[in-house]
Every structure is written in structure tokens, then in C-alpha cells.
Length: 308
Image 1 (cartoon, rainbow, N blue to C red):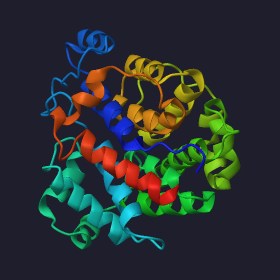
Image 2: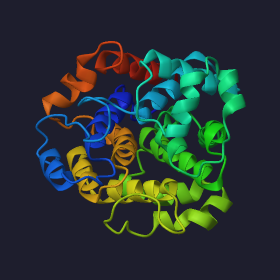
Image 3: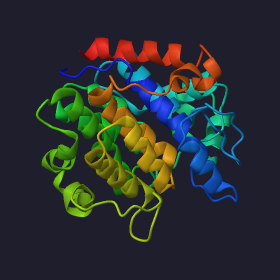
């Protein structure tokens, strides 16, 4: 691995926790909160979510679960391995709010991965499979990246949009870790080169067309899985710092935490020396050692050590 980054999960978590404050800003104080968020002085709470400031969401928790599968097992991976990890990480983190309502309800009543697999109907075309796919970039070959990203996507998002978005995110993560000659503006071309032809034929426009500076959400003809990948590709190509990436995502609105978590997770391998506001690391998860920075740092370091 050419560009090892032991803190991948920390960057995912910091971006997730920070951008969650303005996720889908459809509330009266949204403009004021967005302006406050753009000052980067402290973590803020979302007005309608039952989570304190600095709390990350399912984006980070499921990325941590996928990381544990990579750490604790070797190929061939199985759906049960991932399902067990999702249940265990959800319970380890205190059954946090923020998952999609249906998925959270299932997680709250099952106790094992086998039970989870029996309950799930993997027909979602949203971005849940993509938001947890950054860690798969550490896998050493493109074929492994594509196979494992697809395998875990099929557990919850076995749709063209779900599979494509997971593969695209994992491929971008892999490129920044292994390919020195691939710069962030080149990620779209890299994806088109390595994705299955059916992905490129149906969704390849996201790699060549600019994101139109609007909220990242589902639109007619494009689910939030597709618009998330589109926005991530665009912001990574147009901004040359983590803070610049975050400002643009907050300004766009929509599913800010997922876009930010993916974009920072990918870009951190190239911008890991950038100085960030001290509170982002210090106050993450309220400083909780069980779920916060110390925990995620260890997981991230172990992941990079295994696949270096």
C-alpha cells in the first residue's frame, strides 16, 4: 500500500459527526445553523435528531463494523460475517439513533447476524451500502475490492444503485491508497476503467458531469445512492483540502453526513497532514473512549497494518 493512512476511520467519523448537524436541513432554523456550521468552532446538534453534538451516525458505525470483518476474517468473506458485525457494532455503540427507521427497528429486535439476514429485504436503492464502503479500499487488488463491496451491498441494497454505489466508493478509496499516479480529479476515469460495463453504461455520467451545486438527495431518475457518488466525485475533483470539501458539502445540503463521511474517508489518504480544528478530534463522541477517537484510531491502525 503506497499511501497508508492509519486514521481513515477517524476522518470518516469526524466528517460524519460534523456534517450530521445540517443533514437534510428542512427545519426553520436551517439557514442559521448552516451559517454557524460553516464557522467550524464546535460540533453542533441537529434540531430534530435525538443525538448530542459530536455524535456520529450509522455511516461511521457500519464502516467500523466492515473494518472489523476485514480484521477478524480472511477471504472468502460471507454475508453472515457482515451481518454479525452490524448487529454487534450496533449493540456495542448503545443502539444509537440515526439508522433508517426500518433497519433500526430490525437491529433493535434481532440478536444475531443470522436473525438479521432472515429479517432483511435487501431491496433498497439508497446509499447505505456506499456510506460504509470506504474501508474496502485497503484490499490489495481491484477484483477483491469489487467482489467484497458487492457482497456486503447485497445484504441490504441488492439493487443496481446499491451495488454500483458501493463499488464506486470502494474503488475510489483503493485508488488513493494504492495508485500514486491517480490524483483526486482522476477518480472518475479510474472508476470507469475498472467498474463492470453495466455500471458504466447506466451510471457512468456521474464521473464526467459536474454536480449541479444543489442538495444531495434523491431526484426523479436518480436515487440518493447515485447522487451521493456524483457529489463525492465532483467535490474531490474540485476541492484541494478537507476543509474545502466540507464547506462545499455543507453549502450543498441534503445528505451531508454521508457525502462528507465518504469524501473525507477517501481524501484523508492524500490530505492527512492538513491541520483541522482541534475540537473535531478532541470532542468526537464527547471524548468517549469506548466509541470515540481512541477506539477508532486503534481500529484504523490495525486495518492498515494488516493490509500494508
